[in-house]
Amino acid sequence: MTAKALMFQGTGSDVGKSVLVAGLCRLAARKGIRVRPFKPQNMSNNAAVTVDGGEIGRAQALQARACGLEPHTDMNPVLLKPETDLGSQVVVQGKARGHAKAHAYQAMKPNLLGAVCESFARLKEEADLILVEGAGSPAEVNLRAGDIANMGFAEVAGCPVVLIGDIDRGGVIASLVGTHAVITEADRRRIAAYLINKFRGDASLFDEGLRIVTERTGWPSLGVVPYFPEAQKLPAEDAVALETAIRETAGPVKIAVPRLSRIANFDDLDPLRLEPDITVDIVEPGRALPGDAALILIPGSKSTIGDLADLRAQGWDVDISAHVRRGGRVLGICGGYQILGHKVHDPDGLEGPAGSADGLGLLDVETVLSPEKALKRVTGTSTTGEPISGYEIHIGRTDGPDRSRPFATIDDGDGPHEDGAVSTSGQIAGSYLHGMFSDDGFRRSFLADLGATRFSDMNFTAEIDGVLDRLADHLEAYLDTETLFGLAR
Picture 1 (tube, rainbow, N blue to C red):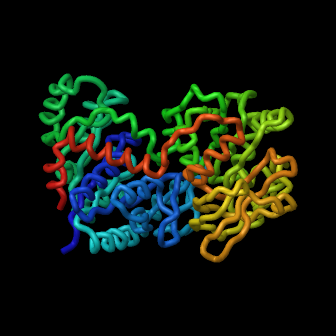
Picture 2 (cartoon, rainbow, N blue to C red):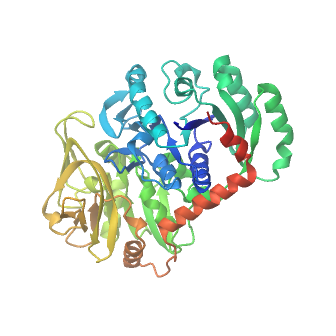
Picture 3 (cartoon, rainbow, N blue to C red):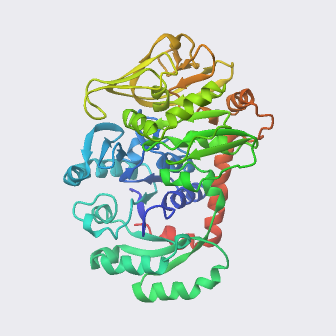
């Protein structure tokens, strides 16, 4: 017998779909249900490397973890990774299939439905329940033709829908009733129920609101979920989360992070935010990098050459040079590592017109971008002697004299090799390793070298699992979860 499925769609982006699905996955798994997450189409530069050697959205990797599973490419068969305001890399079942601008992708979508259905069918064979996450909103009726992310998928899969409204941003009654007004009658019938997310205060004050929504739409309510502050500790999917992320402002050791226009895998920062001596300062465009930072951390990028240009346009290159002259430290991760070198060469025009761009010249290395993408999980040892682990997800190879001083020695299954580079002064370092700060011993050693003296006693991996358990408890307390799971078909 194949699995039943239930889809969660939102009245807009960032209404909490990913977190709710993660919590419900953990709750179902605790009940002994063989549950799997699924998102037909995702758009995110925060990706994870899967057990089968591909990449999927970070949110689906978190949901897999909530199920007690390794992430698999079938959980997110189509991933769009934005490279410019108009175009994205298209990843299908874990592998890059090319690049497409927005209009071209609309024409491409029907051809991707086969891969979506294939992945969904495989998951159904091994599960009792599939919890499906939509993308954006079904109210985007201008995109309904050829849709594979919301109602288009629900129609093909015969999947009931729960619609989520976010009361924290205001206008939740209008967003729910408005969605009912603009979608077709057939799509209205696919919505089995709705719920309200992120309520602050006395939920009974919204009883009349629930009555109005149900009266106007005919959809039953599953309940009102109070705001869950700990959700901010979970890996985020969208860069918009950087604007509301937890910032520990009391820490005397400041890490400044320039908000690159195509910032990627920014959950590298999550463990740092939870350390008592650390302030992680996300520096938005238009603001100078702070002069009192102990470390400038240049994060991953989906478009290294484009972000190099933006970094210079913001004057951040000048700020970084001044920081180094003052004796400050700089760490570049992945695209940030490439930015630190003398040159980034793009002979095949992978990020735009073929050619080369000047890097910051702080590391004596150069990078050549190439079509092959490194997608691998690694373990190893840092130069401090601490165990280190994480994953690589990048295009390009970086070489040069500073590679003789590696950041770490790692093993990706093909034997040990050296990762990254460190300058002769020791001030500048670069690495391709994402997720390094999740290793508690390495994180504490690295931060102690920056001047931190107080450290949390958390096990970061256990902390995330604890948050997922508390989220599941939270949802079970405030939602009619028995009815909710019973809606699956």
